[in-house]
Length: 382
Image 1 (tube, rainbow, N blue to C red):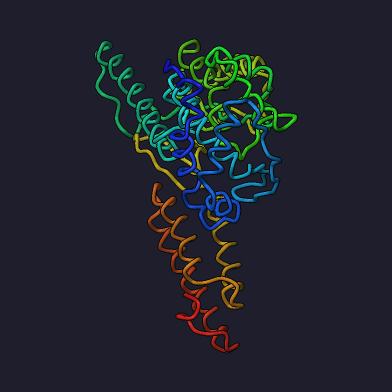
Image 2 (tube, rainbow, N blue to C red; image 1 turned 90 degrees about the horizontal axis):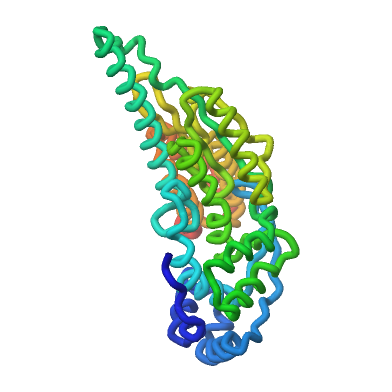
């Protein structure tokens, strides 16, 4: 385990300046960022003094709803608190907690996002197939039998536990989390600061806090360790509240799920009704894609249907807003290209061609409406 930096170094101007630079990236046009930056040195000096004296108190959170990819309540901190969050996460918390994370917990870590999780899932499926195929071929060799013909292969048979934690961030108990963190961060001044930001909500963790995501992964990383080391089911993965475990058969999966429910209960967490056991051949819905293992050992990655439906709705909405002059073509293309870049991580070539054609046809119709309404041509909206 890496030792946290001394509290005085954490409160230093050098640390806070680096945190300020990170916090303002991509947000310099925001009102709160601009106001802080106008007198940044003065603000950071005040912040440093407040941290050293232990007098800092978190500002009220700004609550708002997001609806993509699903409806969620976000509590956003002030810019000053974002600076503190960056300093805590980048200089203290991440380095101390990340060595505890298993390879199969993917969120809130450098270089281990959704696409890393998808690649690991593909690796797990291939490994499962080859292990099963190798064991069968060894048994047939020992029995003096020839290799099994490809049309008789059943190496993709198995079961998968697909789990989802009920109200994950809202269900993390403050007291349990503090007990776990206190063992890693013995400095009482640092503890006091950490507890203030944990307790900013009466229940659970604020989704807008950078520290909350690292705390959440740390809080449940023991589950993946338990699956691999105690249940001997290492072909597993977890991205925040979403997780899977590949099992050789349904009976193993049932027994494992019963034990896992107890492990989650010990953390004060429960699994929602999405949690179930499925045939492995049905594929695994994880990190935005539905990934399948075929009977021949090929892994196929298809974009989640909900993502396709959302993009079709967006295109219809963009057509109306672009025709009315409420959105620019440039902004539409930036948003679409972001979705397209995500879709490229799957076997989606034909889908991307069809969706691009749908978008271009939609924009042509909108441009015709703009021309008839005298709003302006393509160049005026770019």
